[in-house]
Length: 238
Image (cartoon, rainbow, N blue to C red; front, top):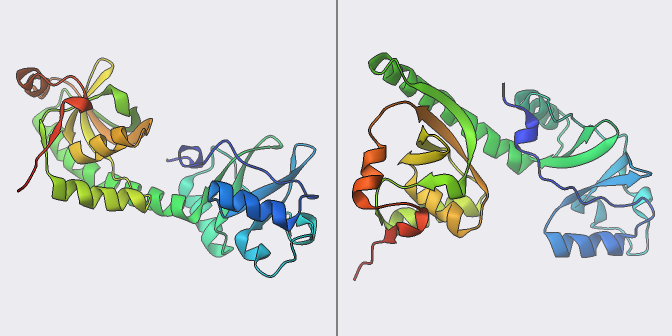
């Protein structure tokens, strides 16, 4: 079961009920976020989105416009259940609460990304199940790996493939890569372009399927002298 905490945006930026529409619009312009939890005395009291502010006057208080008693979720809630709640209630921004404290928020875009990643998970796991019949000693799993722990097993990158992956990243779609785990290092089996872009964008983690066992893939990195994603080269085309 995948929990919603794997997809939340944190730390959360709250608004106070006494904040004005002008202050909320300024926050939208500064952060690019379209929805904010409304918090008073450390407790969630409402939710406000850009749609609530469209026709409002700049001096109006958020308390007059916010949705009171908003639907929320807990960090350990099943991602499928949360997605269903959001779809049923036509919610695009859902606060995540731990105790009485708002610790983050998930959006409809986060749910789309979660759906894509988990659909792919099912397909890849079928392939891995077959793979395990050939190599019964290996262990397979799904996790998020530190981008700086990734070691490439190929040196060259295709600029056309990079452009495609860049467009996907811009839409918030990051497909999981496949890696071979050895100690604390992860050698890339598939997804070099995604890993390279994640590194250049300063991303800390990327979703991945890992294979742990003796696959011999580590030797590819050693033969090419590859130690980090910076060692990769984008092919230039005249």
